[in-house]
Amino acid sequence: MPAPDNNTKLDDVVSCLSAHDPNAMRVEDAQAVIRQFVTPIHAVEKIAIRSALDRVLAADIISPINVPAHDNSAMDGYAVRGIDLTTEDRPFRIIGVAYAGHAYDGPIGAGECVRIMTGAVMPKECDTVIPQELTRDASDSHITIPANAVRAGDNRRLAGEDLAAGSVALPKGRIVRPSDLGLMASLGVAEVAVQRRLRVAFFSTGDELRSVGEPLDEGCVYDSNRYTLYGMLKRLGCDIVDMGVIRDEPEAMKEAFRTACENADAIITSGGVSVGAADYTKQMMAELGDVQFWKLGMRPGRPMAFGRIHSEGKSAYLFGLPGNPVAVMVTFYFFARQALLHMMGATAEQALPLMKVRSAQPIRKRAGRTEFQRGILAVGADGQQEVRITGAQGSGILRSMSEANCIVALEHDRAEIKAGDMVDVILFHGLI
Ligand code: AMP
Ligand code: MG
Image (tube, rainbow, N blue to C red; front, top):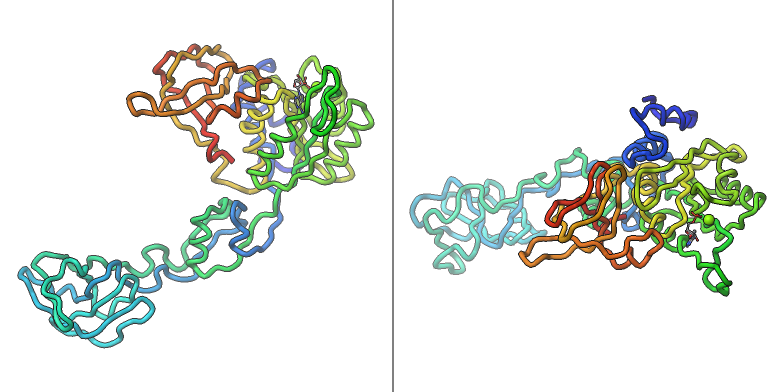
């Protein structure tokens, strides 16, 4: 398959799929097409390390120094030369003190030791620290080191054992975690290059939708998808452009797509992509660019549009998600999330972390589609993790997402699940 660029046609990518049923495109196939089609943005900004939390590193962080910079003590105790340790109890004379930040610079001879604190630089020629609690007969001037209490080299941290100067401390494409902030600080790094935030525009379609704050007319529903999308996009660290509810009217629709395209890297819509949809969403998507309408072999979330649309020399990737509230979240997590991370240049976190656990109950499932059921993972009677389904699994039942703490992902070819069978789960906690 050719490397994707801005001239790649979606048809060419899709035609590379081996056997592909247009009425039940496999989830893995759709994911592969999306992965092939989207390309990372190339825009970098330099920011202070604290601001880099959750951002994507735009370049490797190379350690400018050895960490630790010097051999130092891992314990409070006494530094000695390993060659002075014998197989018998032996008295040592204390000739000085080494504090963290204040080294002992003098020479050290046979039978001599230096009192040393954790983190203090090892005195020259010393390679071993005997922890304070293992010594005997300690006075101001002497200690006894019992036979075989330590081996030469014990309780010493070596220069560069955490990180050697010149080595990659953190790789490009990494999403910065709290430990990474500390690691960068430990290298004396004050600023880092990160990818600029991805801009994602989104709007809802459907004449039945009302926004929070408006009266709910007969037969209408409140627009919840813009809120779940807001939450999911924020978690991914995107800059968001919330375009509200767009009326089901050709000019309004076209204008919305144009504005979104000119102002964002990606556009997410919900609703209007199903077979029976009586609106202009699909028509506009197709008119403005290279867009395909997929019938996915999955539940929830069978219909989805994907592609790239153009306006005024600008282009944006388009994810036309289904309208049902659970389907929006599931298609976001299993298609859009990975693509957006790829666009942000995040390399490592794209794959969803799967856990295999026992199903506490039988689960109804049909072979020939991937099912994403809402689950509750908990500790069973035998102390092992097990998962249950949150009752009704209708794709309009958003409460099932709030009750659940995980998604149970049931593979395409799998049929009925028996109680005790192992299933894949993706925990919400940690899902970005
Ligand atoms: P559609 O995909 O447009 O046919 O919509 C499928 C179902 O999802 C319908 O019941 C819609 O009312 C509902 N729906 C569509 N968009 C939203 C939204 N933004 N918030 C809540 N429900 C929606
Ligand atoms: Mg609709």
